[in-house]
Length: 424
Image 1 (cartoon, rainbow, N blue to C red):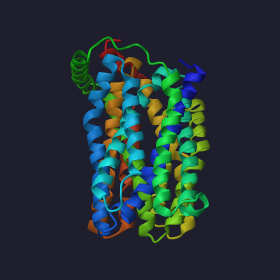
Image 2 (tube, rainbow, N blue to C red):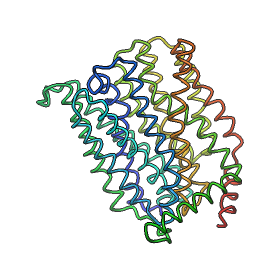
Image 3 (spheres, helix red, strand yellow):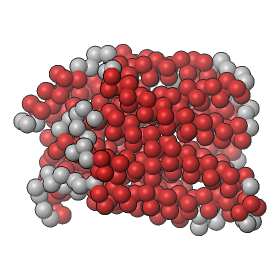
Image 4 (cartoon, helix red, strand yellow):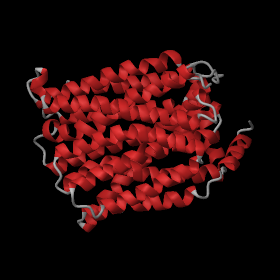
């Protein structure tokens, strides 16, 4: 634990897979899906198709995450499951480059599998955090991961933006070929920079059960036991519900910011510029928040980020100019990585390392529910009110409720309760 090589090897996985989040999920797939894969469909139909794909992949992870986490803990299989899901995502990212124009069904199928690979691998990546960082360094290490994610994902995204905007510079036939090449570049980047984790991070030998059927049986048993224990741990429940609410707001902003900018009439080039701002400002800002948590308190740093997000949402609902969109992008970059990293490390402090995968299964389950409910609320408000501004303002409720519940969480008391409940 606290071995520098292990820490950097672990954090490099964020550098590796963030390329998928930036280039595929946030950047080119939504735009390319409308213009190429589903080009013949009405824009509202293609939006519905894409929304269904995002919800389906999140729902599948919601259903399998806790069980897989329990199985991973029972058999000592965190790295193996991480490898399995990572390479599912890597192969599907490369496969997107092979999907032909108009084949929206195949594009959706490949995209859903890629998302499952991306989100599934993060469960076991998060679960390895207690294995590489001690209690005093967990905030810094978690922050390092997210910071490298912003930098790595941002670098490849910037290269791919150049590739798509100037395909002739690279000897490509046009935008379509450039976008497909960018999908393939994500697969190569993800595969290459995942190697340090697989080679150098050692998984503690907590798994005591061998054989596929015994491991699965023990996983079910541990999952049922953990559900029962969590139902009695009021402090942990408080944090998980608080996290679910405020991260719902964060995830909804991530997923809906470009759509909102388009609704206000901002051009695609300006929106891509804003995405790049978030990536590169997010790198130092996340490191700063991790340092802030060490000299302050993690809970106070998270609470500060929530308040800044509340201000961002309220300002976004009344803005008119593109410069305001850029300023909001900078503000989001200042807190987005920080709130994600510190939430992960704050939770890691309260759970025992030997149960990390199954407890992070619950943690990621709530995060994926957030990816379903937040955009749904925005869509409902937009349809009923006829106003994109009202829709974006509705996100404020998640930050208000999340902040209120976070104030009630007692980290030290909850940690004791968890360990007592698990007889540790």
